[in-house]
Length: 111
Image 1 (cartoon, rainbow, N blue to C red):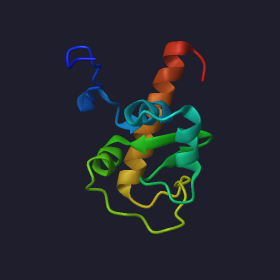
Image 2 (image 1 turned 45 degrees about the vertical axis):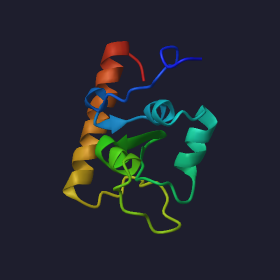
Image 3 (image 1 turned 90 degrees about the horizontal axis):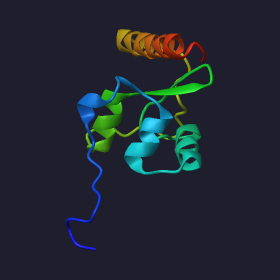
């Protein structure tokens, strides 16, 4: 296969929503669905994960910092955050995630 025939995945960072879903992580990292959820449910996920009900959301900023190698390492044994709002930025993140869910519901008239 020559250079022109190879497919290249280009990450359009500006097109990503502020609150990423597991599908975004799966597509970006090239993981299977099972591997993506195993990563998110692990005792020490590599980036902060927010769980709202039974839905996972990941801050685009935090994920891209981790992806680029500039995200601080987490302490061992940390699990996904579960609505433990630590700071105003967490509240803003949850608000954006909820607004995305409401918008999705309004577009499709279902969760």
